[in-house]
Image: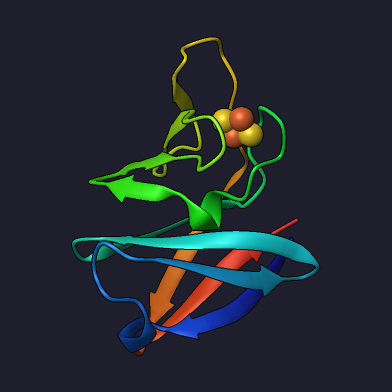
Length: 102
Ligand code: FES
């Protein structure tokens, strides 16, 4: 596991998505209220870019066919078939956002 600084908290307005690279992995950062979550950018369906998706609350819809993920867990909530994307632990320290990737 590596802990990698990926953004400043000020670069992440609430309700917005940001695509970053952490250790060779494309990671979507999502700020929901005061919390920041990180998940994989590649949709579990056919690889659509979740960073171009639509966020509502903590739910992120893939732009290609609308599969919806809970960004807090990476779990696909629509359709409910047990799919998921990886989610990564986030640490915020002194206004900096760090993500732990394998
Ligand atoms: S590729 Fe994401 S819903 Fe199809």
